[in-house]
Length: 323
Length: 250
Image 1: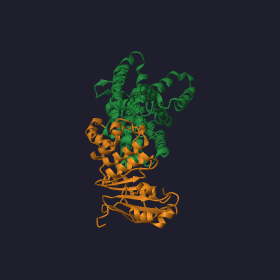
Image 2: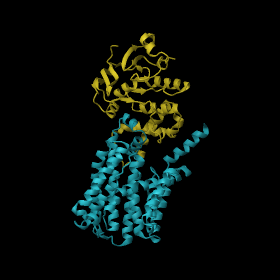
Image 3: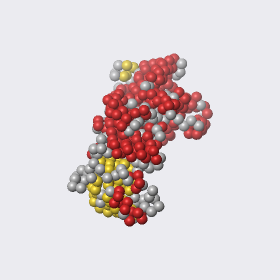
C-alpha cells in the first residue's frame, strides 16, 4: 500500500509543479532562436503556423474531448480574409490578422453552436459538413480567386512602421505570434475554466449534475480554438503571400488530426512536435510525390497501433511527467 | 408527517415507445430523512431516478422541489437549486486528482465562469475546504492521487465528498452500494448516515437488506408502480413485497 500511494503521489506532484514544463518551454524558445541560422526560415515559419493550428485543435480534442473534423474552415477562412484585407483593402498586417481572427471566431461561434448539440461522431460529421460548405463557398465566391486563390498578398509594414518583407523581421514576428498563441492555450488549460473543461472531458453527465452548463463551456472552448486556428491561418497567409483552397480543404482538417495524434493528444508540447514531424516529412519527402500520403498513412497506423499516446505522451510516460 | 415535503411527485409517468417504465408514481420525500426507493430488477427505479434528476423528461406528471415545479427544468438548473445526484457507475473525474475532483464542485460557487485568462492558483483558496471534505470521507491521504487510480469503494467516497461539496439540500444517490464488498458496504452506509445530518437523502437500492437500518422511509417499486411504502418493519412484512422479492431478498 505504501509503495502504491508513493507512486500515485509522484505522478500527481508532477501535474502540480510543472518545472520540467518551464524547462521544455525554454528549450523550445532557444531552438527557435537558433533555428533560422541553420534552417530555411520560411520552412520554420510554416512549421510554427501549423504547430499553432495543431495546438488550437488539441485544445478541443485533448482537453474537452471534442473531435472537430472541420478545423480547416477556421484556418482557411481567416487566411482568405487576411489576404483580402491586406491586398484589396490595403490594411496593415496586424489589422488584416485581426480581421481574419475575428472572422474565424464568428465562424466558430456559428459552427460550434450547431455542432455541440450532438455528441461523438455526429459532432465530427456536422463540423465536417459545415467546413465543406465553406470550401464550396470559397471555390465559388468572387473575392477568393477560386482555383487560383489570392496571390501576391503584400506583407506590408507592421503598425505601418516595421517592414515585414525582411525575412528575419518576419521570422521574429511569426515567432512572437506563435509563442503568444501557445501561452494563451497553456493558460487556458491551467485556468479555472480549463479545470471545468477537463471535468467535462472526464465525465460530462457528472459535470452537468454538479450544475455546470456544459454546452456553454464547450462553445467558449470551440470559439477559442477556432480563433486561434484563424490566427495560425492568417499568419501563414502573410508568410506565403498566398491564400488558397488547400487551407479550407477537408484534407487539411485530416492533417491537423494527424499532427495532434502523432505528437500526443492532450499534451502541451505534443501538437508542436507533431507539426514538426509531419511538415518535415512533407518537405523532405516531397520528391516522392503521391507517396508522401502513403507514408503519412503508415505513420497514422503505427501511431494508433504502437504508440497511442504520441511522441510527447510516450515521453511523458517514460519520464513520469506530463509534457 | 406534518412537515412540508422537500420533493414531491404527482402521477409521474414515463413511456418508452409504448412500454411504461414508470406509471403514476406519487412520491413524497420528507425533509431531513433518508428515503430509499427499492425494487427488483426492471422495477423502474433508475428511470424514476433519472426523471427526478431531469436526465429524462417525464411523459406525464409533475415534480415539485421545495414548492417549485421543476418538471421542465434542466439538470444543471436543479443542481444549482440544491438537488444533486450521484451515479450508479461511480462518477469521478478520472484524470484529475481527488482534491481537484472536490474542487470542481467547490468552484461552482464562482458561478458559470469562463475566465480562461486567469491562473489556476485562483482556485487555491478552495483547497482548505476540499481537504476538509476529503477528510470527512476518509480520503485525506489520497488528496493528490488521480481519481482513476483509487479503489472502487474510495471512488464512491470521493463521489460523495464531491456531492456534499455543493452542500445540497437533497442528495439523490443511485445505488451507492452497487458492486461493493461487505466491508465497503458498511463504510458507505456509515458515510451516508454522517452526511445525511442536516439534509435529505433519497437513494435507489436494489437490496432491501442494505437499506433496512439506514432508511427512515422505504418506497417499494415493482413494474413501474408503487407497491408499498413505510418503514422497514412495515414494508418487509408486506405480502406483495415478499412475493415481488422472492429469491432476491437476503
